[in-house]
Amino acid sequence: MKCYYCGASYRKNTDLLEVDDPYVGKIIVQGSPYYICSRCGDILYTAETAQLIDEYRQQIMNRIVRDFPLEEFLTTSETAKLLGITKQALNKNRRIARGFIYKTKIGNIDVYLKKSVEQFKTSGDGRFVLKKDKRQHQLTDEKVFALK
Figure 1 (cartoon, rainbow, N blue to C red):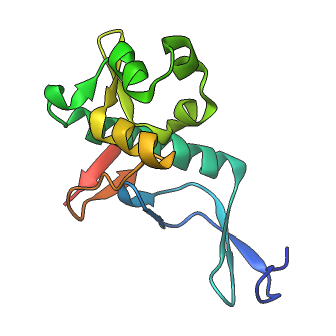
Figure 2 (figure 1 turned 45 degrees about the vertical axis):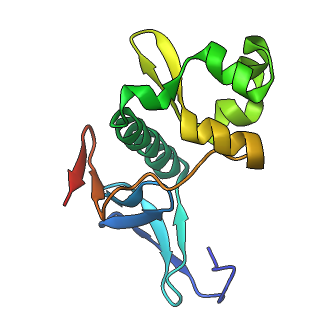
């Protein structure tokens, strides 16, 4: 495979991979295959590696969102009312379903982060940087570790 940027060849690699995520910080993946350009260092993820990174990013985001105090969350009804839509429209909204508003579950109930809902209402994107410190997240086959 030739690199789109410089024309050099990609080589397969399974070494340590560092992914700098704009929302949760640095994610370190071990043992998952990816391709790296021998000249410019451009990286291509395999489908399974990209899916693994995305799954772990969601787990990390969920863990960070759960650290917020309970009073900073809204119920589904409160969220729909704040956005001026019905609960059904809230549940069917594609952007919200794709994570443009941070949410988590408390028991079986979906709760939405109020700051994220307010930002979504004004800009259409409720995502913001969640990393509280310069933590790194190490990914292995079955565990996610936060390194300090």
